[in-house]
Image (cartoon, rainbow, N blue to C red):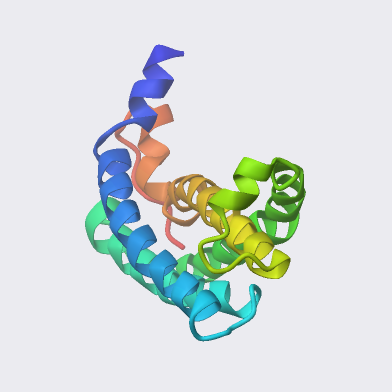
Length: 166
């Protein structure tokens, strides 16, 4: 169990966290600006966030985090599928369920009233925050084990196998 944990928390994980925090801060700030200042809906603002964030992620993962991985159309297709899956799960399954449960507590509602006290603003801010956090978590594992998975195939096979052609 400890060996598996050490394999998961390696250089890729540390790079992913650092780049992820920077990407999260930039793109999430954009999302809240679009929602709270520009009046975009709580469905449209995250699309801008994750459209831009996904491009940044792909390039960061390809050239910094999981470097050395060759590009292919299959990889791009896996990336798009993974991003869409994470987005739909985080924003349309986890976020509404958890957001509605958490907003029953008045201190949580106050925490998310930074865009205004209207219920729609509070609910949108809460759900977008929850969605962003769960998207980041799901996205790490999807990127590592689905999109860029062949980079790690050698961990379970002794390390001398050649990559299979795509």
